[in-house]
Image (spheres, rainbow, N blue to C red):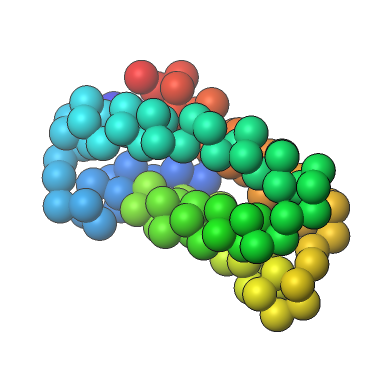
Amino acid sequence: MDRHEQGPGLDFDQAACHLGVNCKQLETMILPTFLREYEGILQRVREAQETSDYRALEAWGHRAKGAYFYLGADGLQAEAEALETRIREEKTAPVEEIEGFAEALQTTLDAIRRLL
C-alpha cells in the first residue's frame, strides 16, 4: 500500500502499529472488515440527524472516534470526539457540525474503498 495513496487524513502505518499488524494484513483483513461494519453508519447518522436523535448521534460519534484512532486518522478522530462531546454536554449540535462529521465519515469510507 503506497503511503501517498492512503487518502485524506489516513495514516495506515500508524493504523498498522495501533492494531499490531503489518500493512498487508491491514489492507487484506482489517480494512474490508471496517468497511463492512461502517457502511451503514453514514445512513444511520443522516437518519438520526433528520429525527434530531442526538443520543444516537453521540453514540455514532463515540464509535467513529475509536475507529478513526485505529485508522490513524487524527483529524477525523478529533471531529468525531468534538461532536460526541458537544452533544453529551449540550444535548444538541449545529447542523453544520453534524454535516461535517457525516462528510468526514463519507470521505474516509470512499478513500478506503479506492485503496481496496
